[in-house]
Structures are given as structure tokens and as C-alpha cells.
Length: 368
Ligand SMILES: Nc1ncnc2c1ncn2[C@@H]1O[C@H](COP(=O)(O)OP(=O)(O)OP(=O)(O)O)[C@@H](O)[C@H]1O
Ligand SMILES: [Mg+2]
Picture (tube, rainbow, N blue to C red):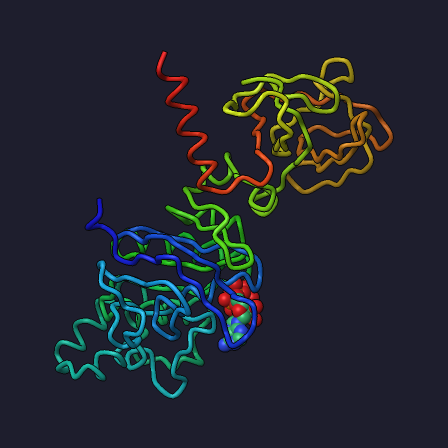
């Protein structure tokens, strides 16, 4: 629904000085109450998008709308947005209570109201009782929660979080992922979260924007992006993938390594060159003559819950397999996979073309 849209980027380009643009013609919408993640490698423009939303910088071209009003040059303090920075940027000379109270004091709220709101925010992040602690007496995870309390106490419509978990160790990081997601659900505030960690993005988000060199390569739910990556960059970036050249013989039939395989994809031209993606966990090890492909094992690593087995098929394509079964280096094995495990990608297709093709194809196949 249109009135659920809080923020909209329309063809936004950002360029610093004479340098090449760091964001190219980016368009997307952010809706109320959802958890968004900006995912991409270092330097792809994630922080730049947050800075544009927050009002710390202005677009070079295009428009940024809040509730359908252009906000390009509205200053940060006039936006219903709060940011949690990577280093939390807490005030070391103030205690926990005063850190959280800071924004309310600036707004000139009364003491009673400040006390009520700060305690409510601290309750949300499970830090009641810590009001008088100094920041330096708090752990990394607790500091992060103070930073979140400081953001939510202002009751913003949107909270921006720039890699807030990257400084934490793995265990605490996993706990905080869960807590953040829970908190977002309880508050019902829109979160825009930045990470370069694909597992974190898959675990937390309602919607992910995958960014590369200042472009949104694909946006969608975690399952959309994992199961239907639109191109090599997304397939490679989201989880490990086997990406192998193929030829689409006809709908539901793709050729790869000299063999034809049933698949569930359609809407391609006959004999179109494509790339096929199969996730390592979707490959099953069999005896050589019982698989769909044969592979010579080149290396094997034990990863705790599975073996990571690498090898080459008869055409020289490299395959990565995650299996609970062990193989031997130098041995020939078979690989089996279901038709559903194959995902076919058109070469150089944009997200718009991809969506159109899927839509046209599903209409055509549902028409009869
Ligand atoms: N103030 C600035 N002046 C000039 N170039 C800048 C400025 N800020 C960012 N950039 C450039 O813009 C590009 C995108 O930067 P940005 O900080 O958005 O990346 P990022 O995706 O957040 O990366 P990281 O994961 O490393 O934080 C980079 O090439 C960066 O060097
Ligand atoms: Mg950044």
C-alpha cells in the first residue's frame, strides 16, 4: 500500500567532487515496520545510502522523499530518523541514563517525561538497573544496547544501523542479531541495517538490497535472493555457489557439461547461453555411475558439520559439494541433484528484465 511507504529514493545519484559516482541512479522504497538490510562489499555505497537517508549529505541527482515530500536538503535534525553508528558514538563522560536522555534534553522535554521515556527505552533493551553506570563499565554488547536505546527514545520512524555488530565476537554477535530482530518486531519501527555479512542479512531481514559498485543488483526477501539470484554477482555474494556455463535447450531442459538436465526454469530462447547455479548443499555424493555428473575429487576439508569437497567434472567445470559423506582425494564420485536444485540465470540480465521475464513466464504457464 502506498501509504505504508515512508522513504523513497527516486533515481538517486551521489558523486563526490569529480570522482566517479558512488551511487548510480538508485531507486527503492522503504515501508513502515519492516527490517531492511543493505548488503554488499566494502566501498559499494552502503554508508552513503544511510547518510543520504539521515540527511548528513545530499544527492547529486534524483530525489529523496519522506512520505512523498522531497527531503533532499532537509537537515538531519528535522528528519524522523535516528542513527546507530558502528562505534556507537556514545558520550564517555555521561552515564547510561544521560546518554539515552541526551536527545530529549536537547528537545527541551520536562524531567518527568525524560525519566519515563528513558526507563521505557532501557526496559526495551533489557538494561533497567544500569542507569548510573559509566559507559566504560559496559561491555561491547551492552554499549550497543545503550546506543539503540538512545535511538528509540526519540520515537523515530526509522532507525539506521551501520554495521552495529561488526565489533562483537561471533557468539555475542549471533545473540545480538536475535535481540535486534526481536526488538524491531516489538517496536514496529522500520530498521535499515547495514552489513557485509550475507548470513547476517539472510537471518535478519524482511528485505535485502544487494549492492555492488553503487548499484542495487537485486532486492527481495532472503529466500528470493538465495533461491533466485539474478546474476553471478548476487549468486556469488549470497552464500557459496557453483556457477557453471550451460545452454537452455528448451523450457525445463538445460544442458551443462555435455549432458541434458531437467530443471524448473523457463522463459528463455531456445539454445540460449546461460549460467546455472547449484548450491553446494544441494549436491549429493553417489557412486560414479549413479550420479547425474561425474567429478574427480581434488580436495577435501572437514568443516565441523560437513565436508567441503572440491573437484572437476569431465568438462573441467569446478564443483563444490557440502556433504556429511566423506570422499577421497583423487577418487571419482557421482553427483546427484534434483531438478529444483538448478537455478538458471540469463547472462547480463537486469533486475527489471528478470522480474518481467518471470512474470510473463508465470502468466503464460498459468494461462492454460
Ligand atoms: N566524503 C567522501 N568523499 C569522497 N569519497 C567518499 C566520501 N565518502 C565515501 N566516499 C567513497 O564512496 C564510496 C562508497 O563509500 P561507502 O562509505 O558508502 O561504502 P560502504 O559500502 O559503506 O563500505 P564499507 O563496507 O567499507 O563501510 C567509496 O569508494 C568511498 O571511498
Ligand atoms: Mg560503510
